[in-house]
Length: 282
Image 1 (tube, rainbow, N blue to C red):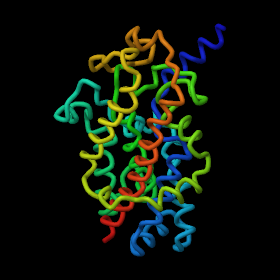
Image 2 (image 1 turned 45 degrees about the horizontal axis):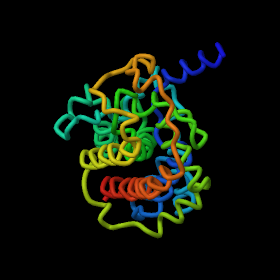
Image 3 (image 1 turned 90 degrees about the vertical axis):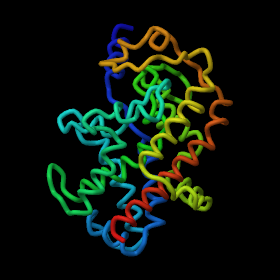
Image 4 (image 1 turned 45 degrees about the vertical axis):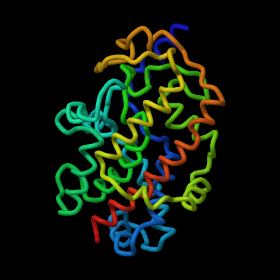
């Protein structure tokens, strides 16, 4: 029991991840299908693959998980993957939730600008593309744009869908229940893309994800999870007792409510990633 407690504490101090590998690969595959020929050639050049659609799709899928494999602490990139907008915040609070522009909302445009100008600083142009592919996926995971004094759901324990916390349930657990094959689900979602999803910008997509988190990730939990004031946590041990000392059971009904949200967010991320890359090399 003591060992389990130590492991739980260690896990609670880890930074949040975005969609699991499957989710990121789905986003990348959808994007690859919607690249212009010019953009596809540029992506192939940067990812060192053949320029045919199948090869680019596979290379982008593999590149999509790279940003979660590097050491986020030594590279100081952990905060790039999310923005902690409190459930009680308004849209006007977004800038102050992104100190020093070290959040997903700021990093995507910054990396796009660097890639367009072929600027090589700390990261090669190939690595910049890998970050963009990954971070656009992260932006569309609702709990990467929301926080309830729980590190984006990482501190709210669950034992549902093979997940230990709410964030993990959204990253991996519920997605595996929907379809464990990234190729199959990417193919399926690609048949139902809404042209309207191409509209907007990174800031608007951030707030869209935040509102989905408020309504669909936290909303169905009701009074079990009260709205907490904005709070930066060093670890989950510092979370309010109402968050730290309970375990939520996510029901099949919760999954049924959120399956359409997960599907749509993955599809939106894919088509919007393509829009950004096509505009970059138009």
